[in-house]
Image 1 (cartoon, rainbow, N blue to C red):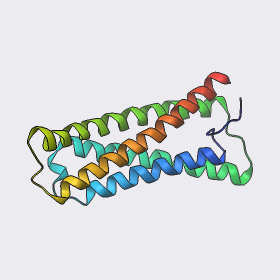
Image 2: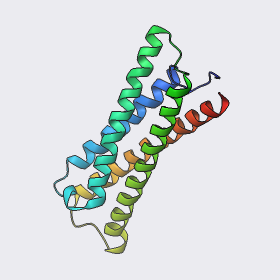
Image 3: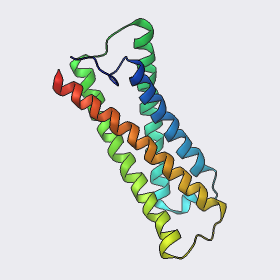
Image 4: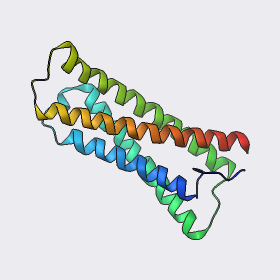
Length: 152
């Protein structure tokens, strides 16, 4: 298999995984600091999806760091196949959750005139921005993993 930027066991792969984890954790933190997020199903789904994203990305970041420290190559066909499936599943869940939450937020701001919750509305928006940033980084990783699997 080819070795290019973003593949498992490289510094850029580690940076992608860490950024996924940090953006998802920031999304959770921003949403969890509000008082009323649990009343809206899309926001609960965002928390659940970003929680899964944090676990997946942290695990793979740890694996990348281990591979870098031991100078191991993580291009085993079965392992890369697992990465592809996991990345595509978490990318799909993250996009769906971020889009649903953005739709609810747009309903509050555009369709209903304005959000009556004040600072909480800004936290909802910040959480959604972090969720989309997490999705962008997981989308990049999933495309790299798919490319690596196809090239192998």
